Image (cartoon, rainbow, N blue to C red):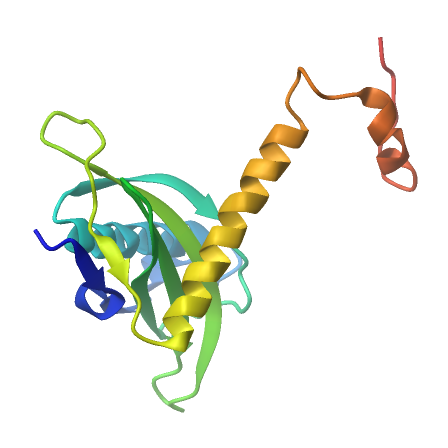
Length: 181
């Protein structure tokens, strides 16, 4: 296995026609179906990079920007944005194309943290990321910032350090009623 790989070496894309069976009660393609496709392509990309079975550890922020219609072609693209020791951040982009007009629109982007596993289910070391251009560096740096923000947020609300008085102002103007013991 290589010590470092480029994002290009692991890049994956798929295109799928959206069928009536993929629709929700509102007649649009169900968000759960799109999330399932995103998870599959993130798995494929991470597995290709690590040459290992991978599992989804987390998904960072999923915003549905535009609805997807039945009959449209949906293209998902995935690439490695960050590598740790055993984990990778896979960037996934979703675009929909109206087949009659050819018009495409960006519908979703998200970041999946995937962890490589060995044959015994233990975390496996992954090749590092060889950054070859400014865009790849921007994506890597953004992933590092997201990682630090998650750590900061999680440690800020640790039960042992948390003080109710610090956050009472957060409820002002919100649709909430406090009834603390």
